[in-house]
Image (cartoon, rainbow, N blue to C red; front, side, top):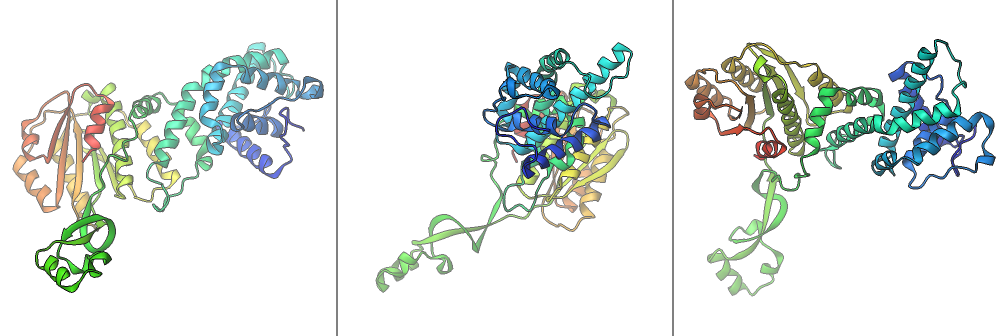
Length: 424
């Protein structure tokens, strides 16, 4: 079946592949595709991907495609849809995901119409007027979900720059991403994270000096192994004088400093319900982004009266691992008591059981004023070469303050406080 867009041929191998991807995701999310066919799937992709998609003349549209023509014409005339297209133009991955979302919502709307009419319409019975009404309401309906999908894509791509060894195929996890983007808790977390500016360039990666490392700059000194060639070209007497006075021009050579894992220890007791747990989960994801930037492993454990399941995220995280992590965060609900001592000891045990002997960081996020065994915890942290960063949500704990490498208080639960937490 032909396209309603100029210059788009559904039989083209690339167009056919994109259409198949959209159809595949729709069937996984909705369970079936009665209204959406290959031609519609291809058009829904290209209406998002192309910088300026043009509809064919209405006289060139076959009668059986009039519904598709009206639907996409209405979408392209929508201001809300134009805002959505700002993010999808030239982005094949996001175009596939949003096209799948549009097609899924169309299938849902048609099914609702059938239920209201009390009949079981067959494919092709959607009128042009009904297609127009659905398209008019669709852009506003999906705008929040699209924003969440953009945030998920940004999170998954953070730390997967060339040379990091991580490659994400978001389209393979398309159905899960659409489901996650529609969850209220995930939307709230991603909305908070979306306010954080790109500070990756301001986060200084830890380095250590090494005479055979990579060149970072220049300095003055007397290390012959790092001497600049221009110094060797000097007269011998002048060279010897500068060497004796340690005034030779040298390369400043460094290697990335090896560090242990970042361990997020999150309180999920009953008092953390609502805004607190949402903010804590957003901070957790920001810490994950930071650990990926620094090529560090990431550990996560929620706790209340007892420590819960340990989640390990490797520095070369795959797309399905990240999706599973988001699904896990969506399932975690606040409830129970608070035992900080037991939680920190469990974290130390987890770190000591690993292979690294480098400095590790535990970030404890809690609102509890629970009494702790400070001397025992301080000794245990020292034994495993671990720094404790405590984040108190709307509270204070003097015992924790004594043993913490950093002690921060979060009062407003804003993105600015999240930036402060991950800047270490």
